[in-house]
Length: 176
Image 1 (cartoon, rainbow, N blue to C red):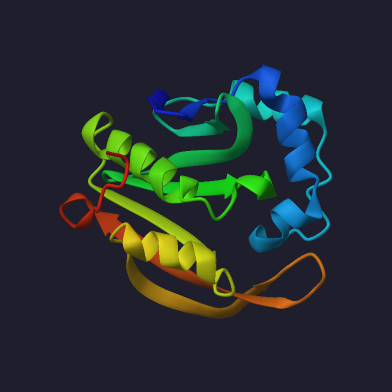
Image 2: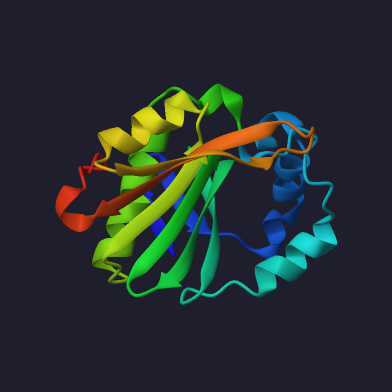
């Protein structure tokens, strides 16, 4: 996948991105909302191995660039029956709260619906991640359920999450 809209780019992650992904994934501040406040403790070699298994049909990790500089990551996973599950992290904190997430998600979602033929997009987010919830709901995502304390983060703290879904008819595209 390669999508560019003005200064924003979404592209397939490659083995050349393993070092930056390793830096982000091992940073507890970046990974805290995903339940890993101590980071993943993963090596570049394992990341390269994981990236080599990515395909457009099953699972794809993507790099977000702002002004052609890697700033974060996205991914999508084919869940079957025309459903894709997505995720996003803007890992460079100086690039957060600038409207990039809404535009980048719009770019990805549009491509998933229009180019790859998905019928529904799903995602989940930590109940405490109010900023993400606000963005998802602006894009047209509907809350499906709140999962109250079904899992613990690395520190053993119970965590809750919200499941969202989006059908193409409800999608509000901010990438134009």
